[in-house]
Image (cartoon, rainbow, N blue to C red; front, side, top):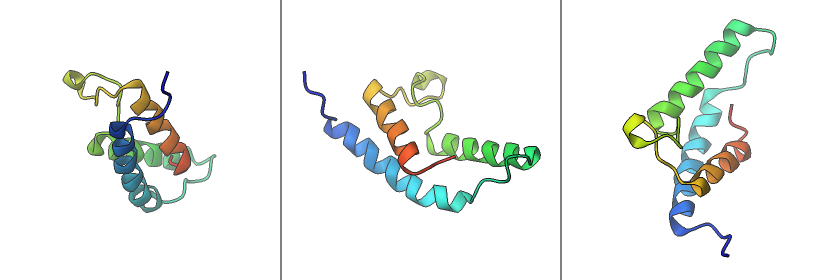
Length: 87
């Protein structure tokens, strides 16, 4: 069994990493944890950015607005979100 990522997985990683390197800092720091209105706005805007870039619902079928990502692409997605300390 080969547990290495495929070339397609690594291409997806590079695309996502480049997007995150730009968008995470531009999104700014999260508001105070007790400022519920600001937190909701912050999180909602982040979800909007993910959606507009094609990164929301990545495992959903394309017919329903997802990316139809493979299991390994999903793993790459979560690794890169964690690496970037994304919201």
